[in-house]
Image 1 (cartoon, protein in one colour):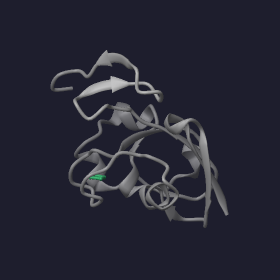
Image 2: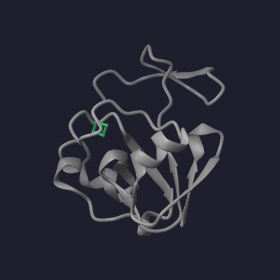
Image 3: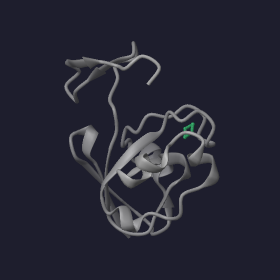
Image 4: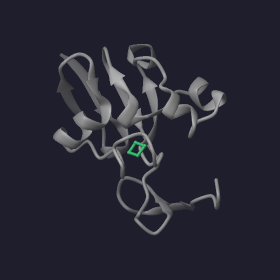
Length: 116
Ligand code: FES
């Protein structure tokens, strides 16, 4: 089993079988990673592997449509396209549903970048 820490959800920890899909684990364990399509199209599930990037599988062509090389270097992946092979800790941008970036407690921390 591997350990997945959902940093943007208060550090919630879940365990899952090796080679699990990151978004699927999040859904099953209520990890909280945002998503829409689940199929690599929308880019909503963009997240950052803060620890254990070396425990994720190869970057998929669909991810390259939403993320730049420098994003990958900084640890960004799309959760629905990422499989975890070992322990990881993941963060993402938390929004309040109105495009405003909030912290885990729901307090606004900054406006989301327009068109970013
Ligand atoms: S949920 Fe749409 S790209 Fe991952």
